[in-house]
Length: 149
Image (cartoon, rainbow, N blue to C red):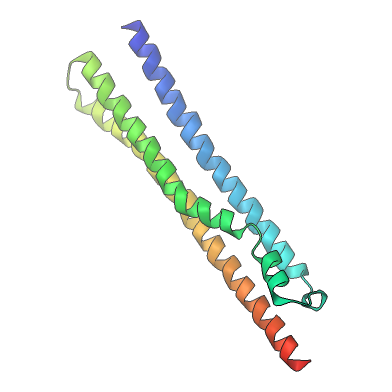
């Protein structure tokens, strides 16, 4: 019985610190890359580029990472939810009694991982969309400048 309790405590710690830690890291990376991209877009000088492709390569650097985080954060949250539900059912089966309060508490705690995944994903997709729009605007300005030459 003690070994099972230790295993459950480890699983709960993994859920809280592992999954939530990964989601926090994803959030920090997204914010960092978004700020870096916005600073680069403000400082980019299209006059320094002779070829559109080189400009586009520099402009789109790292925005695919933001997109990947936005796409995968809900799955990381879902993984945390599945782990949390497994922990809840396992602990209920181990005790051998059905306690509605314990079930509801366990499921509510499990669902926090999904919520956190969405909290990370939604701003990441918004950041990606903003960055992509900035890239389009800068490339259009480059094309107009090239036509005027």
